[in-house]
Length: 84
Figure 1 (spheres, rainbow, N blue to C red):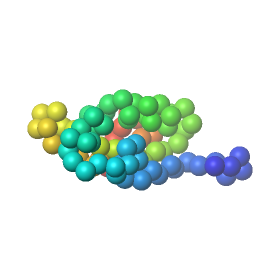
Figure 2: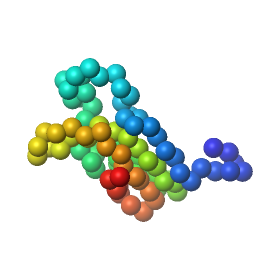
Figure 3: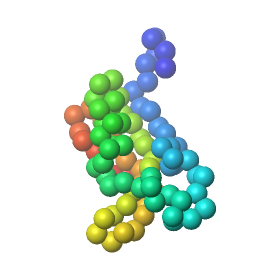
């Protein structure tokens, strides 16, 4: 980002918060979370603070089914979260 050309959209890669260093479900299980959750709250606060749109990939768990998802969320000023 530059002072003359500030970013309005910040796009992060798939699984941006964890990377791909997992060989099994057991390896990734400490990192999955619900959406909304701690990570979306943090990045949502950053989006609101800086007035930007953030696209973020993270591992999600559906607590009802126990299924893990490779999720992308769209966060922006004035909105909590929006699943992509």
